[in-house]
Amino acid sequence: MKLLSEEEVDRLAEREVVEETRDVIANFDVALQQARSGGDRAEILAKLRQDAFSIRTKVQTVSINGLAPLTQRLDEYVGNATELTDTAIEDVQAYIDRISALLDGEEVVEAQDVARVVREMPHMPAFDVNDIVITEIEVMVVMPQRSAARAVQRELVACGYRTSVVTNPLEAIGLIIETKPDLVISAMVMPRISGADLCCALAAMPATKDIPVAVLTSLELDHPDLADLPMTTGRIRRGSEFGDDLANVLQRFKIT
View 1 (cartoon, helix red, strand yellow):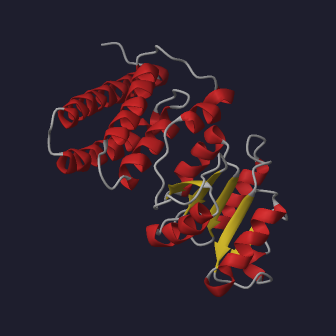
View 2 (spheres, one colour; view 1 turned 60 degrees about the vertical axis):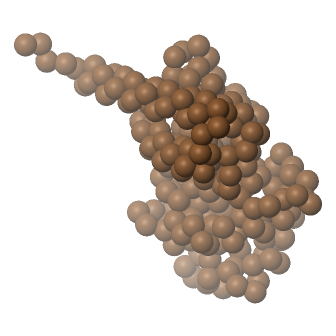
View 3 (cartoon, helix red, strand yellow; view 1 turned 135 degrees about the vertical axis):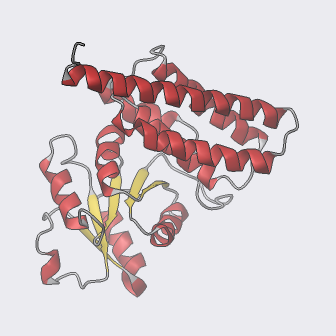
């Protein structure tokens, strides 16, 4: 029996993931049609959340430009949706159609175009923004604690910024490279790699060195533990100083 090369094994594994993802995407299409036909939309939304998280985790090893960030944004969209309105159904359909086109090879997104493609997709804010005009400025929040991330999101949404939350810093690196956010705010303390590690990595890579980065910390701004941060890194303190420090970071990086 012929032994497969390492490259052939990788291709087979990726093909299997793509096929599994296609199956989940097909389930999305069925669920959306059920929602349009009078199905229980609350129940359908709960199922969509499960499937969106499933494909987000599946595709991280697939080398198709734009696939990982699109599935991540789909996961966020259905996660932030409080109900499956007619508009939300069509927005989710837009994601499904785009992801299907990438999986089937009907659309090829060049690496330099991924950020534009992702920003063109529908966005579901994490909070009610009826009285706020949302800009095209994108801020990625990298924090393992969702409660802390939502507090930061609330402040950013109040400023009119589009936000995206990533709880895994290793996943965040790939997404930052592809989507080129206008600002990254990272927790200082995280599992596996720290906020300082993430900031240093982003500052060292040509693809991300010009992306503004700030850390959220409970330490004073001159604390020795912050000495390893790149000079360009912004610092935002938790607690009563949070609002002022965030405003200073946004002003420093000319994010308005």
